Image 1 (tube, chains in turn brown, green):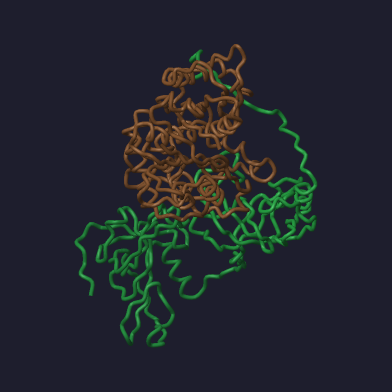
Image 2: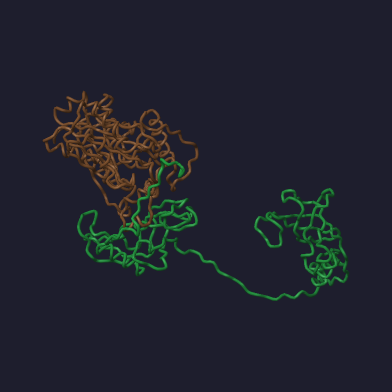
Length: 340
Length: 299
């Protein structure tokens, strides 16, 4: 495998409401920031992740290209998934060996519609979507399957919000009160991640270019994507077999993990993922606050990669793990191991 | 903010909906549903998947094409309670989502379960499908699942014609005149009201009829929170009232006083309907109301 590293990362100061910026206006600052940081004006490959259903407009990602300087034509691709999968595609593209740099970005404005019911549209159209099964309902089913203590779940939310308050890009959410209402029982309203608009960008560099662009590149030592059946009745919802497989394939257990940034949108997902990735008590989970402190859908997973890389860039860690998820109840999992 | 010209409403919609082909496996399942049967498909490894998929997700192998009728009942494995249903949900009152292991299946079906409250549900609870009136070949042909029947409601109704005669007739004729009639036993000296023909203690006939005052003392009472057509409002108080001079209390409503102020030993007096409205029924007495006299020490 060719050495590929994350050499730059930028994210927006996320908002809990629509500021009225168009998507390319939302993205442009973070693209400019990583260009400035690396000094690169053009990239061997560009890949983005977004979801047209968030804006309710077909091919909405195409107009977002206005943020890139896409003329003369650039080599560009898009995934209708979180930007983390755009990074995965870019990593694969860099393995071809003919290019050395890639720009990856993800963005989404979940404030425009009702995210809870928009997420129903990702479900299979025969068995699940016609029931009107929504995002909080299927998450509650998984929470019920995990059956975790309320105290443990609240502690995860409390820690995430506290970390989020010291992250300038995430929200300042209040601490929990004593009694929280149910969203869909057993899920409480504070278990639900905040509605968030935002974007993030990452630059990947291969070979010598990585050290030229970054003092301390975060090298991708393992990256693996695994999936499991879409239909929830075919899975053991209390566990994530695909996250465990992806972690093994990425080599998470080959060394100590100082920091893990997990794409856990609900506190019970963090419990499932910690078990699946076999993370011990020494691993700091989501020091950024994670998705419970800011959840710009379609950028949240990419931000996990950026946050995990940032700990290596700034020298506070030398081996970190980033996780991204997609689909209902952690159906798909992408695990990346980063090393200095 | 429809008044703000810089804010617009935008709807993404496919009028009439998308037409989707089902393929042979899902199509078979939906056809069976239309005939009110639930089938699973057997995988090459012998497992029965409900609802069926064309391939076994565990192995990627095509399924066998052998369809197995399952259920219709099943067991809840996991559930979540929706206190505030959304428009798109199958039920418009609070309900549960559940993964249901139908009898004979090796995977779980996800559907809605109707229940009165979350306490009525548990993993392991048995549920049965409730079918839509006109199945069309759609997952919602099963309207929802409902808990197994464990109780029924029995209606009981018989009609009778009751004739007032004897002592009660005499008593009610007194009530029509606005007096309470009692009777006194010569042997035990107890005064009964309403009046009786015989002393229940001594067995003697009771020849002596006497008029009793319409004042008395509350010996005990109950605050009722269920509505009753005879009571003016809820809560209302029904009490045992020992009429002055009587030895046996009479049951009557208490009125003109808040329920929480009623007490044992309270002095009360009957409130009669106006003379022009009187009949030979207990409806002549609206209720008993406090007289304001000092309470009586009960022995």
